[in-house]
Image (cartoon, rainbow, N blue to C red):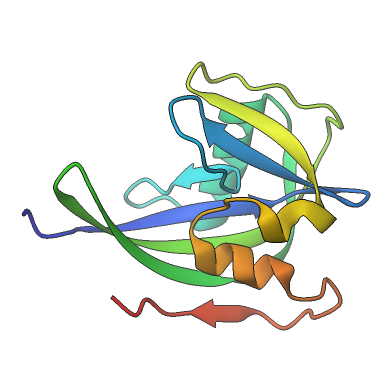
Length: 143
């Protein structure tokens, strides 16, 4: 197995009423927060706004830093290690549509989050904590 490189991923918590916007790769069953990889030398906030524009075709404004989740997994014999930097984000389009052929987006009622397969699991656990808790979280990888 090849050793993992560390990937930096910027993720967006986008809320609408009692719903959360989640993404899914069309070939996979689980969901994840919108966002994507930070390019070398790119600022995290710039990367997240860029990714939202590319994926959803809408403008985005970062509201606040939510937390960090360190995660590792193996896929197709390759070890992956990532740092997910999570931000609350406001978007200008209330009905965004995927601009990426491989992605689809869904508004999930927050009360269905507990029984929905959202990955990484530590992001899901952090999202299940009360919305009123404004303290940033850190979830280290136990791998």
